[in-house]
Image (cartoon, rainbow, N blue to C red):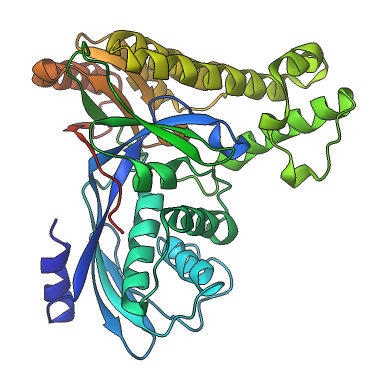
Length: 388
């Protein structure tokens, strides 16, 4: 990545170091982690790089190739609430780290991303990378679990996105060539190699040309609808339901939900049906992956994409169309949109030998439907999570 070169150009001297955090994709497990569901994921060989140097005065200066302007604050006086710009994730990381650790040194930092479009959890990647740099200059050592929780809390408490731990877990725990299978109830996970008979695959990223933003979108509302369904079903069933903010759908058995689902508002029922079905798809997908049945796994990814549209009721016209094009394209095992469907991209498991054909055919069809948008495609390998 070019962040070290850009750092030297901007600040006038060589950085002390550089950290990298990969992007992630979630083939199965869409919209489940915020209610303690099951997920799968890969880290990618593309991501966010940060070149940095320490500052003894506690000042923090951050520049990015993706955004105009420099952002500045002092590590000892992080603004108490979000400022409404791209650096809120970084301020949130500093604010969360300060709750448990003493921060003395600020830093100069230059950020560079492999892709400018969203939907691959670039927000979690830049938060984790910045945390890593901040820990290095302050001599702080965090465990993998602490990195995941601190980055998640930065998004939830500071930025206001009520995310689960999927993104952060993928970007820390994943290993090259293996599928992460994570239970977000307790953080337990497995790293699973595809069975011996598996067809070759790579991860295709197809950018819609639409910007991506979760804060201010309907992301939080969807999560609250699911939580409300769990709260209501527990009340109907006579289950102790406690505080609303602590309730998650993982508290409810499928048969209990099925007994009372017709008493729920339609939107609540749909969100819960997606959640239960998606967790089951994760289980089935893991077995298919172990058996080396990439086609069966891809079919489940297609079903996940359809459920995200029909039951989770997200996905723009453009992303829904792009998903449909991909699912009909020869050489694509399975596809769905990423980043909750609020702009960004679609991800797919694809056949490496048909890479050029896939890119050409998808571009041709998508550009015919949406000529005003700038479509692009990239093909990635899985990779290790962030080195800490």
